[in-house]
Image (cartoon, rainbow, N blue to C red; front, top):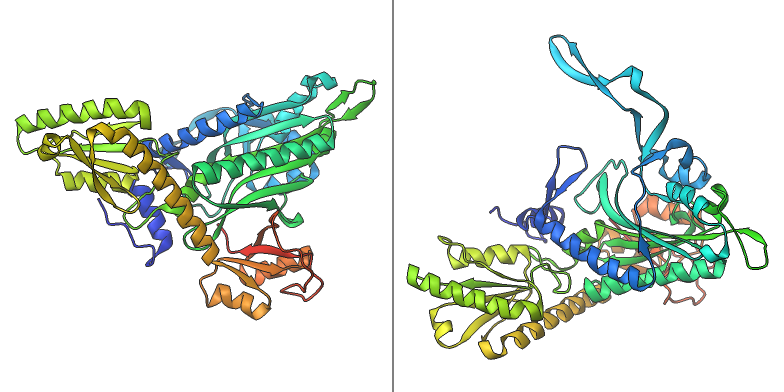
Length: 493
């Protein structure tokens, strides 16, 4: 196994090395796309299960809509097409044919198979979904319509990085319809809170929820809200978004309903999503120079038991004892794996499971078995302690909770130590050119032109305007005009 680059030496290389060492994903033959390996997909499956349960608890159901969207659909909502036009991949033909050029056989689109209307490979599904909603919604009795889709999408990215920004990625996208603007806004904020809960309680990543600026709104939205997280290199990452779409898509696709008094009105809409980008956040928020670190609540394998032996007789005895312990532990703490592979040194196994981020390791040798105990080691801080068989389930459960809490506490301490109140332009620029960056809480005038100027000069963006923020009057850190309050600036992925 290749060495993992230290974070302090090259953070970007470290990130790629952790993904490779933990066998999470690898580059595919298709530019900008990735193969998600079983270890990585198991984490995504846990993300899916947890979020899906949450969505259903809140009254949502799942459906599936086509991968291909008629090009004419995208043009119906002006801001939407402007926002996504540069990222779209287009299907123009439905058949290939073989041709020979200079003695070499290749395939090209068959001219006779050119489509009458071209299709867009979905960059997001608002348009095709709202075309369906037009047929499904007639009366107030049909509302609210609360639908989520688990799918893949494609956005033709020029600069890609595994999980963080790929041409094809996996996600969920919720699309809901409501009878009033108030109900739509309530849904938007409810789903933002669901994402905050998931990031903080399950992934142990503290986030700042709040509205995006007008410049950063989703194409076609009335208001966009996000949760913003800080990574270990002090850059920000947008972990999820929730959009109040108002009546924009309902009007574009003529989705109306008749209320109880017989009045006909367009419905009010929301959309919200979280993608495999959150796995990049998970890696960068907690992992270390030895590999992946996973919060127990999202880890596919909670603990690994490594039996230790010197001869065949001990091997049989240790493996049987380990499997018996795993059978008793799994119903209590979750999946427990027994690493009974032969001809591999225990130290090599320890290193492998450390790279893969399994939260707890249990070592079981002949002396341990004789004493009816194991040696328990935590992945994140390497603390080790002997634990008797009789109390093992409770001890592992308590250790998993300690790890979950430690990871969240470390992340929120890191964010607090790297969040700065900034009141001058010189201090602002010094933070990102001479300092270590981080979150800057600075006054902003509310102007989009000023926001763009800051980004062009510093590559720093307004991440969002947190719900809990200082709205005391002041002067914009850049232009000096009256401020709407402090917002969060950061360099971001």
